[in-house]
Image (tube, rainbow, N blue to C red; front, side, top):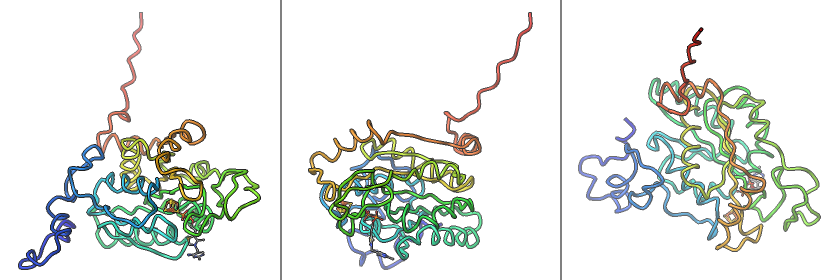
Length: 296
Ligand SMILES: Cc1ncc(C[n+]2csc(CCOP(=O)(O)OP(=O)(O)O)c2C)c(N)n1
Ligand code: SF4
């Protein structure tokens, strides 16, 4: 059992730092904690070096709380702001070259299935829009076409935040950034349509100001990826620095962007619906019996 990893070896408990003791005693491992209980348990991610008010950090925090089995989850990331937070979480994090994340996750997810057989090990990629739609694009698409069973989350701040404001394929047309002063010349890439074409079994677009919705999307995506196929979540996680959003307006911005051009959408394949209903009791996907035809 992976929970044994975090427990103290006999004789070591008195030497462990307080944070570690807290994590073992009050962390979410082996429990079914939810976002509505935040504040009542020690979170896996509590400290990070991200900018104050960064929506990406809030989303990452919510996503990690939502992992169905955090003690059996490995995150994979790449260059970009998000890895600065994800790498501080008290669960394993694998960091490859910029854009390699879906190639790394493919090998990791296959290897874990061979090594651990029938035990569940979840692999979750979290990478920026540049890492996912630009430099990592080929590896992302091929992992989907190959039906690799892990979750890909795009932290879509619509800019290269970590390197000071270059445009990405996910920047909206016309946006002017510090290092794109003439304005983006092309449309924002439609990665949701590409995920559909490539055969992802679950696809969602979401913003971070509805924690329960984020939780529901992450849980479904991770559970479906265990057996049915690749899953993709695209999250609007604004960069308040590069888009000059005052820190106290970050959630307001997320709400207005959600109402305007980043609406909540969710696609669940028929196989994934049946799997969620049968295996995890999702009522919304239980097939209703066809009413008998009465003849008169
Ligand atoms: C091969 C390679 N090219 C370029 C870089 C420099 N680099 C680091 S982060 C980054 C941009 C990250 O943008 P994005 O993926 O959108 O993530 P964000 O920082 O916005 O979260 C770049 C170009 C690198 N680390 N490795
Ligand atoms: S640069 Fe932007 S995305 Fe990166 S940590 Fe700061 S606010 Fe967040």
